[in-house]
Length: 228
Image 1 (tube, one colour):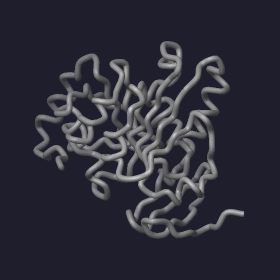
Image 2: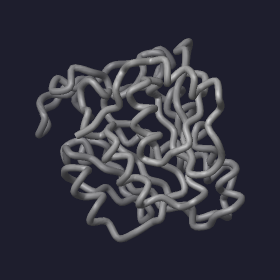
Image 3: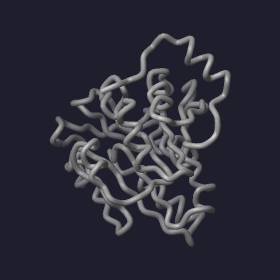
Protein backbone atom coordinates (compact mmCIF):
# COMPACT_ATOMS: atom_id res chain seq x y z
CA UNK A 1 0.00 0.00 0.00
CA UNK A 2 1.31 3.44 -0.93
CA UNK A 3 2.05 5.91 1.85
CA UNK A 4 0.02 9.10 2.10
CA UNK A 5 3.20 11.04 2.79
CA UNK A 6 6.77 10.23 1.82
CA UNK A 7 10.18 11.85 1.50
CA UNK A 8 11.93 12.54 -1.77
CA UNK A 9 15.17 14.17 -2.80
CA UNK A 10 13.38 17.53 -2.74
CA UNK A 11 11.52 17.45 0.56
CA UNK A 12 8.32 15.63 1.38
CA UNK A 13 5.28 14.83 -0.74
CA UNK A 14 1.74 14.50 0.53
CA UNK A 15 -1.14 12.87 -1.36
CA UNK A 16 -4.18 15.09 -1.86
CA UNK A 17 -7.48 13.99 -3.36
CA UNK A 18 -8.72 16.49 -5.96
CA UNK A 19 -12.32 17.35 -6.73
CA UNK A 20 -12.71 14.78 -9.51
CA UNK A 21 -11.55 12.03 -7.14
CA UNK A 22 -8.10 11.64 -8.65
CA UNK A 23 -5.01 12.13 -6.46
CA UNK A 24 -2.19 14.61 -6.76
CA UNK A 25 0.92 15.29 -4.73
CA UNK A 26 1.72 18.40 -2.71
CA UNK A 27 5.43 19.26 -2.70
CA UNK A 28 6.87 20.83 0.44
CA UNK A 29 9.90 22.03 -1.54
CA UNK A 30 7.89 23.98 -4.12
CA UNK A 31 4.95 24.61 -1.76
CA UNK A 32 2.56 23.64 -4.56
CA UNK A 33 0.50 20.70 -5.73
CA UNK A 34 1.39 18.94 -8.98
CA UNK A 35 -2.10 19.51 -10.37
CA UNK A 36 -5.17 21.70 -10.05
CA UNK A 37 -7.20 20.82 -6.97
CA UNK A 38 -10.26 21.03 -9.23
CA UNK A 39 -9.21 17.71 -10.73
CA UNK A 40 -5.83 16.15 -11.48
CA UNK A 41 -7.10 13.88 -14.24
CA UNK A 42 -9.42 16.48 -15.70
CA UNK A 43 -6.71 19.13 -15.83
CA UNK A 44 -4.13 16.78 -17.35
CA UNK A 45 -6.52 15.60 -20.03
CA UNK A 46 -7.65 19.12 -20.87
CA UNK A 47 -4.24 20.79 -20.88
CA UNK A 48 -2.24 18.07 -22.59
CA UNK A 49 -4.27 15.37 -24.34
CA UNK A 50 -6.62 17.98 -25.79
CA UNK A 51 -4.28 20.95 -25.49
CA UNK A 52 -1.53 19.29 -27.53
CA UNK A 53 -4.07 18.09 -30.12
CA UNK A 54 -2.98 14.45 -29.83
CA UNK A 55 -6.03 13.36 -31.82
CA UNK A 56 -4.82 15.32 -34.85
CA UNK A 57 -1.13 14.58 -34.40
CA UNK A 58 -1.79 10.84 -34.15
CA UNK A 59 -3.32 10.92 -37.63
CA UNK A 60 -0.11 12.37 -39.06
CA UNK A 61 2.76 10.81 -37.13
CA UNK A 62 3.72 7.28 -36.08
CA UNK A 63 5.58 6.93 -33.91
CA UNK A 64 4.26 9.98 -32.10
CA UNK A 65 7.00 11.51 -29.94
CA UNK A 66 5.84 13.25 -26.77
CA UNK A 67 7.91 15.25 -24.28
CA UNK A 68 6.65 15.96 -20.78
CA UNK A 69 8.31 18.59 -18.59
CA UNK A 70 7.71 17.32 -15.07
CA UNK A 71 6.86 13.64 -14.52
CA UNK A 72 5.24 14.18 -11.12
CA UNK A 73 2.79 11.37 -10.42
CA UNK A 74 3.09 9.84 -13.88
CA UNK A 75 -0.45 10.89 -14.72
CA UNK A 76 0.54 12.40 -18.06
CA UNK A 77 1.85 9.08 -19.32
CA UNK A 78 -1.07 7.08 -17.90
CA UNK A 79 -3.71 9.26 -19.56
CA UNK A 80 -1.75 9.39 -22.83
CA UNK A 81 -1.47 5.60 -22.91
CA UNK A 82 -5.19 5.24 -22.22
CA UNK A 83 -6.09 7.77 -24.91
CA UNK A 84 -3.84 6.22 -27.54
CA UNK A 85 -4.94 2.67 -26.74
CA UNK A 86 -8.62 3.55 -26.95
CA UNK A 87 -8.50 5.94 -29.92
CA UNK A 88 -5.38 5.19 -31.96
CA UNK A 89 -4.31 1.61 -31.19
CA UNK A 90 -2.51 1.35 -34.53
CA UNK A 91 -0.25 4.33 -33.75
CA UNK A 92 2.88 3.79 -31.70
CA UNK A 93 4.11 6.54 -29.39
CA UNK A 94 7.22 7.34 -27.41
CA UNK A 95 6.87 9.26 -24.16
CA UNK A 96 9.88 11.06 -22.69
CA UNK A 97 9.53 12.79 -19.34
CA UNK A 98 11.92 15.10 -17.50
CA UNK A 99 12.04 14.72 -13.72
CA UNK A 100 14.55 15.93 -11.15
CA UNK A 101 13.42 13.70 -8.26
CA UNK A 102 13.90 9.94 -8.87
CA UNK A 103 11.77 9.12 -5.83
CA UNK A 104 8.67 10.27 -7.73
CA UNK A 105 9.42 7.86 -10.55
CA UNK A 106 9.84 5.01 -8.07
CA UNK A 107 6.63 6.00 -6.32
CA UNK A 108 4.62 5.87 -9.55
CA UNK A 109 5.64 2.24 -10.16
CA UNK A 110 5.23 2.91 -13.88
CA UNK A 111 7.23 0.85 -16.35
CA UNK A 112 6.74 0.60 -20.10
CA UNK A 113 8.95 0.09 -23.11
CA UNK A 114 7.74 3.38 -24.61
CA UNK A 115 8.29 5.42 -21.42
CA UNK A 116 11.67 7.00 -20.75
CA UNK A 117 12.19 9.26 -17.75
CA UNK A 118 15.31 11.42 -17.84
CA UNK A 119 16.37 11.97 -14.23
CA UNK A 120 18.20 15.13 -13.22
CA UNK A 121 18.25 18.82 -14.08
CA UNK A 122 15.95 19.11 -17.11
CA UNK A 123 18.18 21.75 -18.67
CA UNK A 124 21.03 19.23 -18.76
CA UNK A 125 19.16 16.01 -19.52
CA UNK A 126 17.21 17.48 -22.44
CA UNK A 127 20.30 18.96 -24.07
CA UNK A 128 22.04 15.58 -23.95
CA UNK A 129 19.03 13.65 -25.24
CA UNK A 130 19.50 12.27 -28.76
CA UNK A 131 15.91 11.20 -29.52
CA UNK A 132 12.93 13.03 -30.94
CA UNK A 133 12.05 15.34 -32.55
CA UNK A 134 8.95 15.89 -30.43
CA UNK A 135 5.49 16.36 -31.90
CA UNK A 136 3.84 17.28 -28.58
CA UNK A 137 5.26 19.02 -25.52
CA UNK A 138 3.47 18.88 -22.17
CA UNK A 139 4.93 21.99 -20.48
CA UNK A 140 4.03 21.09 -16.90
CA UNK A 141 6.70 22.06 -14.36
CA UNK A 142 5.87 23.79 -11.10
CA UNK A 143 4.80 27.40 -11.56
CA UNK A 144 7.04 30.15 -12.97
CA UNK A 145 7.32 31.77 -9.54
CA UNK A 146 8.55 28.51 -8.00
CA UNK A 147 10.61 27.10 -10.87
CA UNK A 148 11.51 29.97 -13.26
CA UNK A 149 14.39 28.16 -14.99
CA UNK A 150 11.88 25.94 -16.79
CA UNK A 151 9.90 28.93 -18.09
CA UNK A 152 12.61 31.16 -19.51
CA UNK A 153 13.38 32.31 -23.04
CA UNK A 154 16.43 30.06 -22.98
CA UNK A 155 14.36 27.05 -21.91
CA UNK A 156 11.82 27.56 -24.66
CA UNK A 157 14.67 27.89 -27.16
CA UNK A 158 15.93 24.50 -26.00
CA UNK A 159 12.46 23.00 -26.44
CA UNK A 160 12.28 24.48 -29.91
CA UNK A 161 15.59 22.86 -30.83
CA UNK A 162 14.13 19.44 -29.96
CA UNK A 163 10.76 20.00 -31.63
CA UNK A 164 9.29 18.75 -34.90
CA UNK A 165 7.93 21.47 -37.24
CA UNK A 166 4.39 20.20 -36.50
CA UNK A 167 4.88 20.45 -32.73
CA UNK A 168 2.13 21.59 -30.38
CA UNK A 169 3.18 22.86 -26.95
CA UNK A 170 0.53 23.31 -24.27
CA UNK A 171 0.71 24.62 -20.72
CA UNK A 172 -1.59 25.65 -17.90
CA UNK A 173 0.13 29.03 -17.51
CA UNK A 174 -1.34 32.16 -19.09
CA UNK A 175 1.24 34.58 -17.68
CA UNK A 176 2.30 37.40 -19.98
CA UNK A 177 5.91 36.84 -18.94
CA UNK A 178 5.70 33.24 -20.14
CA UNK A 179 4.00 34.13 -23.40
CA UNK A 180 6.61 36.79 -24.09
CA UNK A 181 9.36 34.27 -23.35
CA UNK A 182 7.81 31.82 -25.81
CA UNK A 183 7.55 34.49 -28.50
CA UNK A 184 11.16 35.60 -28.06
CA UNK A 185 12.21 31.96 -28.40
CA UNK A 186 10.44 31.76 -31.75
CA UNK A 187 7.10 30.20 -30.81
CA UNK A 188 3.70 31.23 -32.17
CA UNK A 189 1.55 31.76 -29.10
CA UNK A 190 -2.19 31.18 -28.85
CA UNK A 191 -4.56 31.92 -25.98
CA UNK A 192 -6.82 29.06 -24.91
CA UNK A 193 -9.51 28.81 -22.26
CA UNK A 194 -8.24 27.51 -18.95
CA UNK A 195 -9.34 24.42 -17.05
CA UNK A 196 -12.19 24.47 -14.54
CA UNK A 197 -12.92 28.16 -14.43
CA UNK A 198 -9.33 29.28 -14.93
CA UNK A 199 -9.53 32.26 -17.27
CA UNK A 200 -6.90 31.13 -19.78
CA UNK A 201 -4.09 28.76 -20.66
CA UNK A 202 -1.50 28.83 -23.44
CA UNK A 203 -0.77 26.83 -26.56
CA UNK A 204 2.17 27.36 -28.92
CA UNK A 205 3.31 26.24 -32.36
CA UNK A 206 6.23 26.77 -34.72
CA UNK A 207 3.90 27.56 -37.61
CA UNK A 208 1.20 30.16 -38.19
CA UNK A 209 0.73 33.70 -36.93
CA UNK A 210 -0.04 35.27 -33.58
CA UNK A 211 -3.39 37.05 -33.44
CA UNK A 212 -3.24 40.84 -33.52
CA UNK A 213 -5.41 40.97 -30.42
CA UNK A 214 -2.91 38.90 -28.41
CA UNK A 215 0.00 40.97 -29.72
CA UNK A 216 -1.74 44.17 -28.58
CA UNK A 217 -2.48 42.66 -25.20
CA UNK A 218 1.10 41.56 -24.62
CA UNK A 219 2.52 44.83 -25.95
CA UNK A 220 0.47 46.84 -23.47
CA UNK A 221 1.62 44.67 -20.56
CA UNK A 222 4.87 46.00 -19.07
CA UNK A 223 5.81 42.68 -17.46
CA UNK A 224 9.11 41.33 -18.74
CA UNK A 225 9.71 37.84 -20.16
CA UNK A 226 11.37 35.27 -17.90
CA UNK A 227 15.09 34.95 -18.59
CA UNK A 228 17.89 32.95 -17.02
